[in-house]
Structures are given as structure tokens and as C-alpha cells.
Length: 278
Ligand SMILES: Cc1cc2nc3c(=O)[nH]c(=O)nc-3n(C[C@H](O)[C@H](O)[C@H](O)COP(=O)(O)OP(=O)(O)OC[C@H]3O[C@@H](n4cnc5c(N)ncnc54)[C@H](O)[C@@H]3O)c2cc1C
Ligand code: FES
Image 1 (cartoon, rainbow, N blue to C red):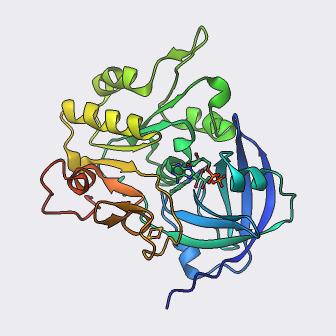
Image 2: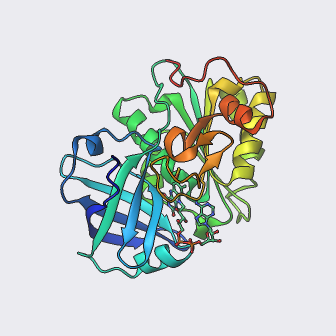
């Protein structure tokens, strides 16, 4: 039987990190083995007693003491209440859930494209590449509406020193790169054609990025996106997160693009739906 009882989660600290976004440090009071095996891109359910429960991505995976970080954008009831919680507050935790990004650093040149808060689910991929001393394999293009809307200020300052990191703004000031991430694909592909794309952000950005990469010769089985769906149980029981015949909480939130298209019924399903290609 699935145990859906939340475990205790301690709020260690939080600070403002972009417009309507806060950076949270949290600690699972009694971490389990699964908490130490989190893959970037997986998610957890955070609950506030009397208010509700919502899914969030791990910004950093839990360490041996259960400490991890998350970036939260204020959108409504639960996130609004979370922003008001004091240090030391006890929250609820369930997880980890879903499947993370494929981590295929051995031979691939990977393009990461993020929009807005979509940088958070990709943060672990960047840090993991750096940990394996392979940041040269990565190119990041991060888009936001304007500079105040950019998130992960401390991490971006560090990443700019570690790897090619292009930041684009829909409303740029002089000296900043104007436009969406797509406006820089020609430059990125001319410099180093990627073998794979991992993309997270608003769905229109992800779909446009995937199609732009297809047009430049990348095949759909080398493209990954991360979907955001309404989640209730996160255990494959309630069906709130359906994408065609797939439960996003179980098979997602990351999907290989050919699998995603097949689920939409757009293109023929690939015979091979297994992930890791390295
Ligand atoms: C796998 C996954 C990972 C996520 N990771 C993060 C994260 O790292 N950081 C972060 O800030 N947010 C993340 N989200 C989104 C986050 O779960 C929602 O913003 C949150 O549930 C909103 O709760 P609320 O009670 O504050 O807002 P509500 O009052 O429930 O809703 C406010 C508004 O947001 C819309 N909304 C809420 N949830 C969703 C959703 N899942 N999809 C589309 N629209 C929605 C509602 O329709 C409404 O318009 C993630 C979602 C998923 C599915
Ligand atoms: S959230 Fe209930 S089945 Fe996915």
C-alpha cells in the first residue's frame, strides 16, 4: 500500500531571489535512502498544514542530513502562505517523485534552454556537470522577461565563471541581450552544434525550442522537455496529471520529445522509449 503521509520538513531559511520568487533552504528531518538518490529534474510534494500540498523541483538534491534547496514562485494560496513562514517552521514533505533529466555527460554536447523559473529544474544538471569537471560540454541559454524577473542570482554569478552562459531578456537595457532564447540559436549552433537539448520553462518556449532544434538537425530522441501539470496524489492514482495515456507524476515530468509527441498522437510512437543514450 502506498503511504501518502507527509514527513516532517524543517524550513531553515529563505531569501528573495527574483521577482515574486524566493530561494528556500529545507531539511527533511528523517531522510530515507531514496532522498539521497534524487536525480536533477525530479520533484517533491510540499505541504502546509491546513492549506494544501503542491509539487516543487529540487534545486539541489538532499544531502546525507536531508538538507536541500528549492526555488518557489508565488502564484497563489500555498506559495503565498509559504512565503510568510518563519525560519524553523515545520512543513510536510513527500518524495522524491517522477523521473529526472538524463545525465549523459560522457560524450554529449548538451544545450540547456531555460525560461523564467524553469532554470531551477536545470540547476542540478549544471552543478552535476561541474562536479564531473565537464562544464565545457554544456551551453546554457536562459531567458527572462526583464532583469528583475531573473532567478537564481547567486548561482548565475557562479555559473557565468564556469561555462558558456547566455542570458536573454525580452525587455533588455543597453549592453544586455535582447530577445528570447530562440534568437540566439543560430549563434549557439554555429559555435558548437549540440548533440542534445534539455529545455524547461513555459510550454510555448519548450515547444518552439524543440522544433528549432529539429529544424537544425537534432533528432526528437535527443530532445527533452519538462512538463508542469496539476498534481494531487503524485502516486499514479488520481489521474489529475494525465498526458494522453501517461501519468506525468510517474513517467515525467521530463519527457523525451518523440515520446511527448507520440502521447499527443502527433507523430508515430518511437519503438524505443527508454531514456539514457550514453
Ligand atoms: C513537477 C512540477 C514541478 C514544479 N516545480 C516548481 C518549482 O520548483 N518552483 C515553483 O515555484 N513552482 C513549481 N511548480 C509549480 C507549482 O507546483 C505551482 O506554482 C503551485 O502548485 C501553485 O500553488 P498555489 O496554491 O500557490 O497556487 P494556486 O492557488 O493553486 O494556483 C495559482 C495559479 O497557478 C495555476 N497553477 C497552479 N499549479 C499549476 C500547475 N501545476 N500547472 C499549471 N498551472 C498551475 C492555477 O491554475 C492558478 O491560476 C511545479 C509544478 C510541477 C507539476
Ligand atoms: S498526480 Fe495523481 S496520478 Fe499523477
